[in-house]
Amino acid sequence: MRRKVIKRKKVGKMKTHAILPFVLEKRDQGYSLREIARLLEEEGVKVSHQLVANAITELDNGWEKRIRRYERLLRAEHITKFFDRWFQTRRPWFAALLALTAFRNLVTHPKTKIPPHWIKENFLTLSTLAVISAELDPKLKKEYMALLEYVQCLVNFYLLKHGQRPKNFIKAGYRRATKESLKFLVGVKNNIFEEEFFNFAKDILQLCPQT
Image (cartoon, one colour):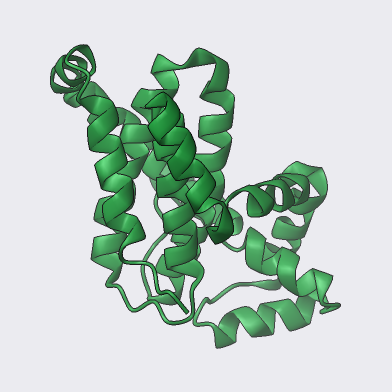
């Protein structure tokens, strides 16, 4: 019984985080808590007023600042700059920025019609690549995790709208990276990890709607 309660709490927290960008957008537009809850229902996301209130508290406790910062960073118009920086440095950081920007645009674009299972599978791959990159670049580890957590919110909101449960992809990414650590270490040693990350980012970018 205790395990079920803990699991519900974890799912509730993931759901709260998933609706944060939507709640912030609607609050900026002047909607009340009750109106935001109704708008979420219209999006296909069932929420209680308490869940929306929890989201507002999270925004006031620092998430609003994070969302605004990362929304400015992960814009489609920055993709060319990220490409240029990748070719100059070959650093996984810029492959991560490309992939995260692509996923951000993919799950927020109104014309996106990609099955949830594809989103889950590929965002897990991105999470795995990102957590490995973060461990290889301690100075940027905090930024990696913060950006990944923000895009995870957007991905989970997409899943909620399609009747799926939110998932902790970052935790799953760490588990997967640990399980396959030998393969990734060989890739890093042979300088192919960076190329794989970059090629993955390019594949995701090609799926983003252009208009």
